Length: 242
Image (cartoon, rainbow, N blue to C red; front, top):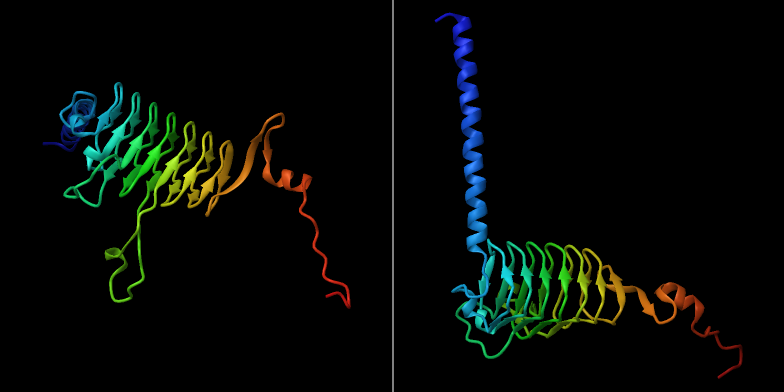
């Protein structure tokens, strides 16, 4: 075989391999699309029947990262829970539960890669949407005993509530004891540990309110409001004052 004929044969082989890769790629993509469609949990699905309630037109997209304790999870109507989401109630699949631990309202959207992990009670109102990789939990670890690993020490869970119409940005964390009001914007990466009032915007770690809605004024910065109504100035006592 001459050098030229060898080069031609190599070109033909490379072309054949490229065609093969494209065909195999198309088959893999088509197969994955079928798997996503078939694997998505919808009303009437055998897995959906395990839930305390699984609303009409709701779906948990495939693949799921972790899913257990369905009997203590209520999902309202028209909810979309994205792929790679962790949704759980209780400490483990063997944990025997009583009543709703996680309650998600109607028309909620939980973003890709997010987690909703409930040990006592998490309530998410209607029309709550989140970005990707948001984490909501009512549980935490303790650290009181220095002779035990922190991972083996559980602190008491504290209920979490997220009001209707709120939005949680990408990567936000909502931790035990947090209460988020209605129509609240939680900025990307914020960490919510306390209470956020209705109709407010909060950012940071820990999350703090930077804007709120005032009837007749619209959305105002909290700093502007503080400037408009300054706290009384405290002067040091004059010499001789008691």
